Image (cartoon, rainbow, N blue to C red):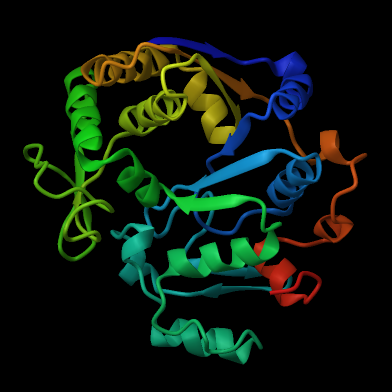
Length: 303
């Protein structure tokens, strides 16, 4: 499989328009958590343009991740801790459940108690689904793992482990993320018999699987992927060594699967709300809304 990766910074909007004209799917892979107003505007604007938008929510991060604050519920005038730092510090989002204290605080704020005992990943996903147009396809990264299949995932992890210089991580039975003493492929986080524990694929494997999945979906024909990249993806794709490893892992997996086609990935940077401001997308997203939860709770978007 041949892989081309580009960063059409100066032509990012044109690349998206061309992708829409060609019927391509535009991808976005934010961390699960409180999606900011700019991202909501971006995704809604893409849908308004007629794009097929696929959002892959990465739910294999720490529960106290500082970037997306998945353990918090962000409101315009408050931040509610859904789980305590003690509970979430060593856990991935998918393993965290709202505490009784978090449920009480949410109820006191007027949100209600319907989220008691739900995982914080599910809370954020439900809110995002409600906030965005129904035409946008939103899935967890662990759903994506199951889609490509356990055997493909296992091979991607094995190939990635051979080229990176850091340990593979795993989630134990208590939800704690730790460095694995050895690679155990008998159970994979999100894709095994025990979905809340097991081996985590490293970044190189996750990015490689996106390329392999795109090639598989193309059925042997050359294909293009347009990934509207955020800050993290911008940093990842600017790392030459990391991207060389991603290509190497993807090619090894693709060769094993006898995938012959060429995959071209355009990481469009930046494509944010200022570019889409002239388009006809829901303007309430821009009116001091801090996250998708504000949008849902404001009643401006029907549940």
